[in-house]
Image (cartoon, rainbow, N blue to C red; front, side):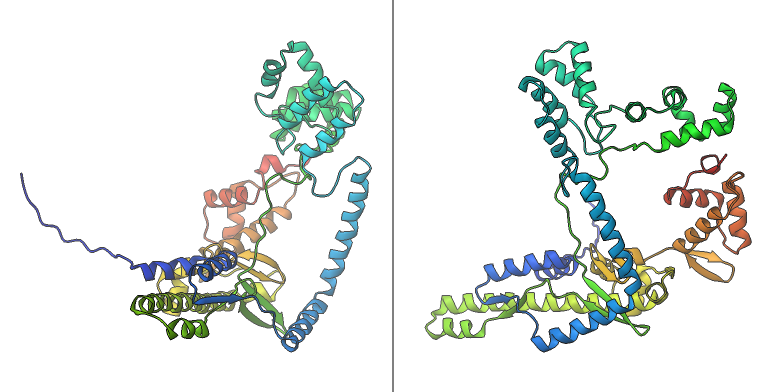
Length: 453
């Protein structure tokens, strides 16, 4: 048996440092809950959710009104969208649909008002409960139906067909082909459109239109008419209904306001209760305190002060990191179509003279709100790609790629090789494989899938 001596270096964080790291990683909502827990556990801490003084509130309100006035055109478009949404809601109400209603609730509502025996309703309710949010039946729903209610296969098929007549069209299908066929038959579509789905769904998905036209000896115009009928169908009948899982709302940790081409960056403290040490309570406890009580008070006081330091440190770190990100990505925030510049966490860490892991924890699960929307902080870190004597972000290359594809001849779409050559001609040093990866990431099909006949 050989004995060996090894020297290893390990970094062990103290309990205090662990607490500091955990607080830095928390987003606004998590920190709010944590602050309340601290106040409940430590009697020397108290928290409040006081509103801003009326004068300060009025000033901020005026600033926001000015900001909104600058975006008046955008507000008008929002108003138009709101009116269109109300129109859709009025249309839905005619069929018993309610805003926020799940697909399952809507199906059960329709079943309950059917004038059929209660036993039949029970079977239909089972199918409704076995329908996924997409509108498709779960894989073994029919088999479970037959087993649970002791039905013949022919009876189960008849009940399923009845269930598939419910709104929205296509609901209760077991696959895409059946979903499209249900909708086409309900619309009294042309026999050829139905035949295309029955025999050539895979070919349609691959845009092999010339092959189909040649096989059936029809003109491209006739085929495109059938294709238009197919495209009017909804591949996911359940889309447009509320999900059954609770909606998670995003609370921005960073607010960026633009005024006169100047950007203001603030940490959102509205959600976080204001914690403070209750010195009056400390004084009251110490008036008639024995040695044990005095030790307890001193321990709790240290815990409270350290927690407050950690929260303050989190806010200052987050403020510095956010300010650097906004300054570096200034073009994105100031220009409506501004692109992101290349940025690494290591760059931020070097500039702010902090560790890269600190930057990573500071941006983790946190969001930034600006006039262009709400974005996760990590989205502002992009890879650098070479372009002659400068570097550009991957997002910038994607936008150039999208522009090239939008401007191509749709009857002779560019292949990935040709797209790569176009980008190379513009100075981007990029491979065909990377172009294909970016194209797929943007949800753009290949050349055959983009071809228009």
